[in-house]
Amino acid sequence: MASLWQRIFGAEIEQRAAQPTIPTRSAAVVTADTALSLTAVYRAVQIIATPISKMPIETYKYATGIELKVENPVLVNKPDINTNRRDFIFQTVTSLALEGNAFWFKQYGSSGQVNNLTLLPAASVSVSYVDSNDITKGVKYNYAGKDYTSREIEHLKLFTKTGNLRGISPIEACRSDLSAALDLRDYAKNWFTSAGVPTGILKTSQALNAEQADTITNNWHNKQQNRQIAVLGNGFDYQQVALSPREALFTDIVEQNTVAIARLFGIPARLLITTVPGGSDTYTNLQDENAIFWRHTLMSYTDAITDALSNCLPRGTRVEFDYQHLFRADVATRYSYYSAGIAAGFLSVDEVREKEGLNV
Image 1 (cartoon, rainbow, N blue to C red):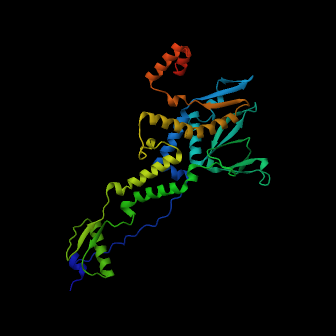
Image 2: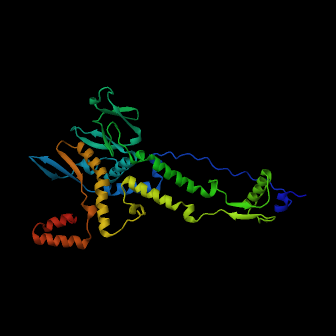
Image 3: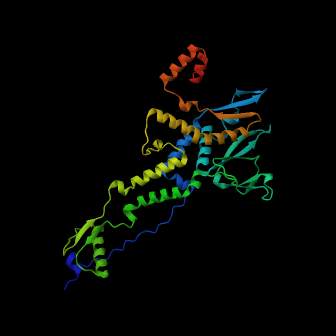
């Protein structure tokens, strides 16, 4: 009497396919580089760094009891002789966002003033006390096996905590959330190839032992791999296991992760092409959202940069970013404001030309 599998699949003996196995899974290792491989993290860092890198920087000097706006020193316009200011600021912001720290190596000229800054890779710089038994002696920095003092290294921190010599990055503080996002991304990527989920189920009302079930499964698997016609009989029924595209891509969970990353970096969710349930994109709400983004996110970066850059300038000199261009109204609104200002006497034509960048 023919065996069960011969009655179903024919008399020809086929080589058994290897049994499908569920791949081993382990939690993703979260580093600055792996976090940056998430599209939401990449975009969030870019959204923060781009406007800051393009902002004008103004210099002020305190003298004779008043503070005056003065021409920018060369160090402000070009902190690193080997790169332009935009890239230097952009990379500094990126280091703060991903590592929580940025380190500038200071070089001094013959006048004793800082004349060049070099951004060091934050992950390669260690910070420790000069004397662990006497913290009043300050800290030292080690890079590439060599120790440096605070006079040689300007240390920028994004988020500070008492007792921590290094700043705390968003990635470090919320490592488990980003690990879950990386795990989901990788699992979704492998869903159709190695997720261990069967493509279908063969059902029968007949009693099968383990050997018969394995034989039938392997032969069915061979038929599928070779794209051959499968013939069902003796009460067998095939039920396909399928997910909708939304389910297969875990769209809802991915959107939740994107909102969580936006919250982590202080980015308006809409800038990451997602929305918060119940949110409203009215003009007033967007204006308020931009102002909040400026005050509570961008300023944490710009304050760290301006404080550090001011420390590299002569005493009594400081710098600050000019945020005005981020909130420029449309042309018609600005011109209406200028007309009213000139008519009221608190604006001059020359001041208007300067604001519009026409005095070139």
